[in-house]
Length: 402
Ligand SMILES: Cc1cc2nc3c(=O)[nH]c(=O)nc-3n(C[C@H](O)[C@H](O)[C@H](O)COP(=O)(O)OP(=O)(O)OC[C@H]3O[C@@H](n4cnc5c(N)ncnc54)[C@H](O)[C@@H]3O)c2cc1C
Image (cartoon, rainbow, N blue to C red; front, side, top):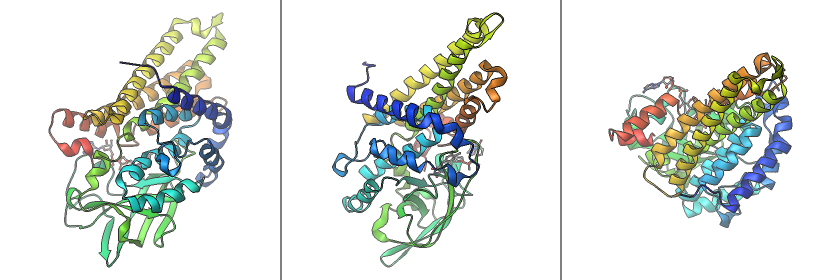
């Protein structure tokens, strides 16, 4: 076993760390407090991230991307999120979809959709699965015709006509390209009738509605949009009838590990800040780090972060090596890292005392941000249920979700 990162991984880590500390961190708090979601979208940082090769980190080399591994994306994700979680999520939504570009698209779809994505330095991607009537049920294992996804796709000559509403979507209403799930036959369960379509945002009938206002990841959007008789060419179907299950089983191998890595970055930022504060702040005649009560909290924080990082790296490594245990490990890493990061951020607020909740310090923001991944990418309860079901060999769909 080799715990050393490769030279290329170290270079990406350094580049992302510099990007986060020089560009993101100095501005993140100010931008976080802007009142409107529209005004918070960091278009300038997306452009700069494009210049640095970060936006296209997962895009195949032949199309001008870096085609980096999942482990590298986790390393870069942690660094960016130490600057701002929302921005890291904007990038990660592009990296997750890079696997779809690379492995799920046909060659003609690749030639149609990848070059414009690469050429446009502010383009991002999004995946629209969640709807008012389906949240956990697409992450979990509830497979029935009479519940869940209402979005439909009806074949009409050389087209499909999509109708439905998607909500909570990361990069929603700001992305240029969407991967949309729909039911081809409302009388059949998703395992038989679920499909995935590629929908550019300028397609007539694609109607952005609003950005959800929220307390976490405030620089990233969560959009609600509608598909209203949205006609797309039949060749834009990416995963056809009943292949929806392949979305997670085959084409989003790093999804959970990457998500886990971003929330880990928030925990690390909180730990670093609390450590710096504890070294400076004097009470009881000494720096508070010299009080055992504070020192023990810092040790616990370091241990939680280290454990989470190891689990993330393991999940990423397994996914990069197409190991059969990658999916369970991804779920484990997501749950462990989000709970570790949330606890680390909570402890950081305690170490800062009253300052922990004041706007003069970033720690209250870290705590708000860390809370998002207790729910995002599947609630931790659902992810945990999937771990048990999968380990017990009870239900294949539990492992893959829809
Ligand atoms: C920040 C953020 C980003 C997101 N980004 C995207 C995105 O890009 N694309 C997308 O499609 N979706 C996205 N989502 C949606 C996300 O996948 C869902 O919010 C999540 O799966 C939970 O669904 P829900 O919100 O409908 O909660 P519900 O499913 O209503 O869950 C409510 C509660 O019930 C519990 N519960 C539900 N079912 C069961 C069960 N069978 N057994 C036990 N407990 C259960 C849950 O654990 C939870 O505690 C995002 C969400 C967030 C918060």
